[in-house]
Amino acid sequence: MAALQDFVVSRVRAKLLKVLLADPAEMYYVRQLTRLTGEEINAVRRELLRMVDRGIVKAEPRGNRVYYWFRHDYGFYEELLRLVAKTTGLGGAIRKNKAKLGKVKLVMFSGKFVHHHERSQDEVDVLVVGTVVLPELAKLVRAEEVVRKTEINYTAMLPEEFGFRRSRRDPFIMGILSQSRVMIMGTETDLLG
Image (cartoon, rainbow, N blue to C red):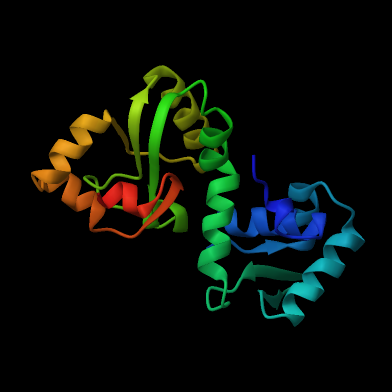
């Protein structure tokens, strides 16, 4: 299974990216990042300074702390966000437990879900297409709901149902396909037909 460490040479940077991009709107201070990554404080400080120098992370002093957050205007922000979505959290859990989930063909996260933006009640966060073992999927989703402290709106469909509804331009499916998305498993071509 692919991991963030495959693409980022520094173990500390990989852990910092995972934390900073798990909730891109959040700001963190050094000791908090040290606890969340499980790394030494000096290694975290050094890596944060490198990331600030390269324009990846923004730093702002507030009181006696310096807060850090990922810059949304960084050139590879969206790509790194997609990579983190695929390798950590619910995306990582789905990919890791693929065999237990049945025959999964497609998994798509909405852009709002990946960016941690609020959605309307009728929007879907996660679409899973395949012959899915629903109790296994529900268990993974519940674990992520605990972490995010919010309900995740997900739907699972058989490939035949998805294909039929897509071909008939079903409003529910068209609503999902019209939004920004991140493909966790499968491709955009598979999704759009």
